[in-house]
Amino acid sequence: MKVVLAVVFSIGSVSAAFADYAAVDKRVRTEPLDYRIAFCSRLSDGNILPTHAFVIYTRAAPGQSADFMLATGWAPAAGKKFTTSAVVGAFSEEILTDRSQNCLPVLVNSEAWQAALDSARAVDFEEVFEGDIDQLAERFSVYRLLEDDCITFVQFIAGKIGLKVPDRGAKRPVDYIPELAKANGA
Image (cartoon, rainbow, N blue to C red; front, top):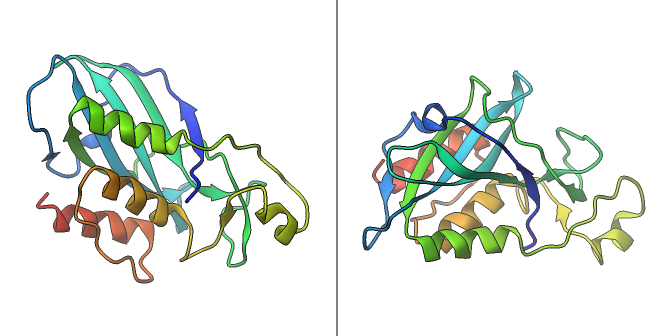
């Protein structure tokens, strides 16, 4: 599966973004920094549909604001917010202050955090806006709703860090993240 990076954010405090579910603790030892991967969903641009899921990686000294934050997501290219056909996947700038956002935070050790982050960074992606989808699919990741989309991306990263990954069915992202939280005891 190919993954698309979103954007790096400079932040002050991230605690509000992770207030919806109790943190799942997958750490096996203490470390000088806290490593967190949050699985999030939100409404799109304040509308009910479509909805979106994405992953946020943070690193911070205990009790301090994050010194690193990266939001990664998987979305259709060319500014398309919703599509039922295959389109080229694209960078998705994530909205981290959206009031509809809810997140499942997972505490992990540094090597699990780095491995998940490296998986998200694995693709050297160039955004493409136009072209024949069959030809483009040979060179670029193709976004397909219910097959290879933002929930598929969340499932991929969740599996990388050892979370129980429930079947997605035809759930919307705002319905899937609570299922992921429930499956993992949050």
